[in-house]
Image 1 (cartoon, rainbow over the protein chains, first blue to last red):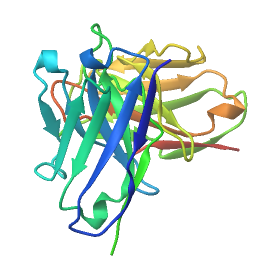
Image 2 (cartoon, rainbow over the protein chains, first blue to last red):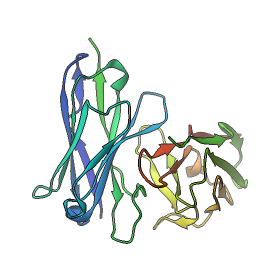
Image 3 (cartoon, rainbow over the protein chains, first blue to last red):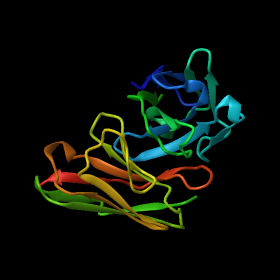
Length: 125
Length: 108
């Protein structure tokens, strides 16, 4: 069974930093591409970034609102995905979900098959 | 970025009704279109990918169709557990992936 478990959310002041994590199991993490999606309170879904598998280059792409402030990384030895968030703004307040982006070799990127339960990040003074 | 527009934004329906939600892309996305269901306080769940492929474990009352810019999600017979918000999402070419604004399905 695929499981994605986020952790590390919390309250942070504007301008501050936070790193959230996602522990993955139930699929071959080393081959998977992964994404982060967020949802502000009462709002819709917003894709914020993706990281490819190391065998496919390990590169990452970001949405414009977070580019230059957020960094996605992965530790394949731990089956873990990370989102480092710097220079946080009040508008970054949201539940952050990690998702599989390309779960299987036959998938196209962007089929967000599996999701974690999310972790809440609140940016407030 | 590719814009995704869903309609309607909300609808009221009864158990057993046939429900249709539409999604329009601002440019052609071939069939790189997924549909999700989300209940309050929970993560979205993938229902349909590649416009018409049913995700494993999803009931067959859900179906998707369309290509290019116009897509449809159909629930053939609405069940109590289907009352939720539905989102479409495109994954054409390169990121950013973008979502529709959501359609809330409520009990009539």
